[in-house]
Amino acid sequence: MWKDIKWQGIAKIEKLVAEYNIWELNIIPYGKFKIRIYESSNCTYSGYTNIHIADGLGDFQYADPCDF
Image 1 (cartoon, rainbow, N blue to C red):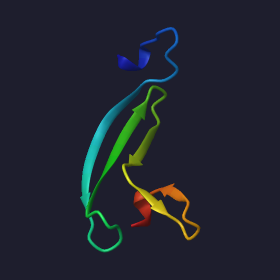
Image 2: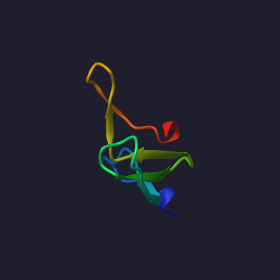
Image 3: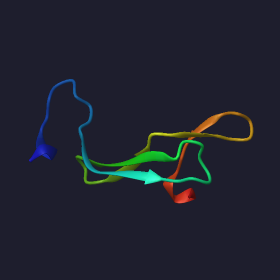
Image 4: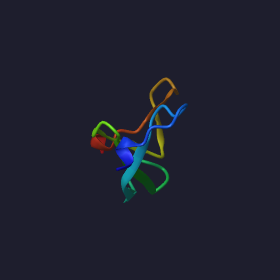
């Protein structure tokens, strides 16, 4: 399986297992963003968005989909 692939110099392989388009009209100024869910070779899952949210100091943070 893909989890067993070992290449010298490759630190990590992740498999994209899901991608969602989210439409939101009240919180973000864009209207649409994506959430991608990845599976790592040690069977853990992580999700990432393609937007950043500025905090009160103007620093950007990744948007947590659970905050919506």
